[in-house]
Image (cartoon, rainbow, N blue to C red; front, top):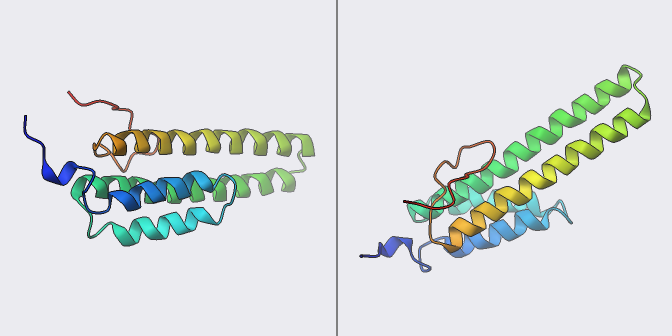
Length: 137
């Protein structure tokens, strides 16, 4: 069995990918780290090994998809208020949305960290949900 030299712990950009996953997870407590993670992912992608670049693309898309989902939820929440919905309905909507977003973010980061530590690329970095292929044949 031969090991692809570019798919090792020493691959270019691998350390940055680990840091960016940490920043994305840190955004659960401090939202400020999410844009920093997106900027770093976009910045480090061009010079990285191809398999690490798949992680960086996955991370950047995690930020942008999450941001768009939050914007859509905000507009929907405002629409509920405009239509005169009960504050309880708006509270339930917000609670369910942000709980689902939190689960989505943690799952994407967990899958990414698992694949990164196994020196595997993200098979479909442009997926909306998760890259669920956790092992290669």
